Image (cartoon, rainbow, N blue to C red; front, top):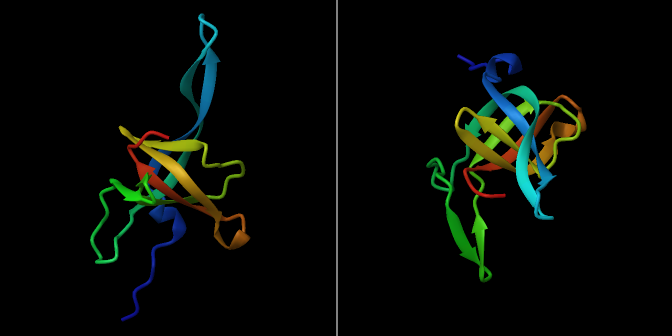
Amino acid sequence: MIWKRKNKSSRLRHRLTLQEEVMTPDTQGGYTRGWQNIADVWAEIVPLENGSGNKTHGGEQLFAGQIQSRLTHKIILRYRSGVTTAMRLLFEDRAFNIRHVANDYERNEQLDILAEEGVAS
């Protein structure tokens, strides 16, 4: 029996909010960092696996004397122009900071986003 992958629309079952960072002037001459909602999108959230086949749980590692965070999830959504690594995605009470955006095969059909969950940008 050949296993068939579900069609794309049935895989995009998570409702996420795409946000971009905004800097609002405060009363003391500085700025306050905040997030502005851009759009609600349907997506698939896929936990990434490490080399041994286990799901990753995030964390940090020391590399070349600097703390490096690990990618924890791949998020797949329908193509949308303008998505950058300066944005983040929210799902319920979880925040995913976007670290890489790829236009799947340059077809403008879907975006493959590599993200890390719950760490400061």
